Image (cartoon, rainbow, N blue to C red; front, side, top):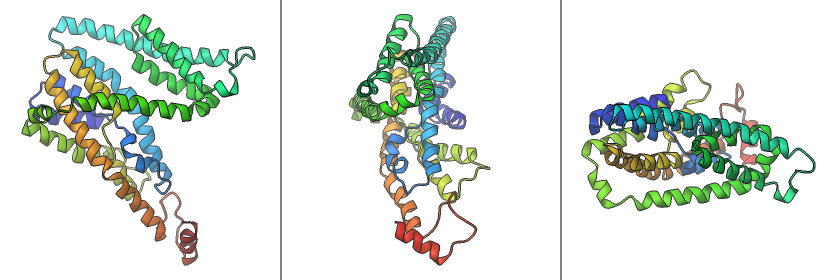
Amino acid sequence: MPLAFVFMALVTHYLVGLDWTTSFLVGAVLAPTDPVFASAIVGRKEVPARLRQLLNVESGINDGLALPVVLLLIAAAGPAAGAAHTAGSKIALELALGLVFGVVLPLLVSGLVRFRLLGAEAKLQPLLPLATGVLLYAACHLTHANPYLAAFSAGAVLASVSPESKQAFEPLGESLAELAKFAALLVFGALLTPQLFGDLSFGGYVAVVLAIILIRPASLLLSLIGTHFDRREKLAAAWFGPKGFASVVYGLLVLQSGIPQAEQAYTLIAVCIAFSIIAHSSTDVPVARMFHVNELVGIPDADQAGPTTTPEANGTVHART
């Protein structure tokens, strides 16, 4: 993620002409990934489990890690240095409060529901994390704490201290998450006008192409040096870095921030997200089928392979498939 962040900032500055602060802001917005747009990879059993886990873990942590950087760079890109310093201090306080609420509130709720008189009925158990989220958002609204970081940290804490709540909430949570993502993508799609694509310069389109086919793959391949992933897994993981929900939300924050080059930055971000969705959503199934074909012909995954493969083993693979 830091590699993609820096490489994208360099490309943005030299090809699009944005100032350094805004260029790094674009890099931070486009650094997170979203496997929802590569669900054929993450959700297919024939794809090696460790590859699916890698993509899930990566996308699960990088949006929360990118948020403080995005907010601080928005403050730094403001018109006045003094105002930016004040805004930076305010944002730091909001982030700290969000982190505190995100850790303390789930611990408090988890502790309270363990009392027999306060425990929820089994059929209402899926609503416990949802109620926690509502309380968390109310606390953030009253204190101006950052709700993004609060929600991110609260989800991690609640899943750790209350696995039963996580398991009960998962089916409902997935549906609610998809609905929320649909609403955000609806707003984002409404802003994708022909004029927006026409406003992006030739250098901007070059930067978009580089972000998708070079920056993300090169960054992840460098990061996987020395790991036990085989070549197919490394190439699949390097390619599947779609820009998704987090980049949409952060891009909208940039557009509404009022910084001097907000519209130019958002134009580049929006076109990159749109191209990424098209590119990755149209290639996930063929890559997933590649792993399936390899399994059919008896080529084992690296984490399942032994020293040798016998004809009997190949027959077992065919029978199991």
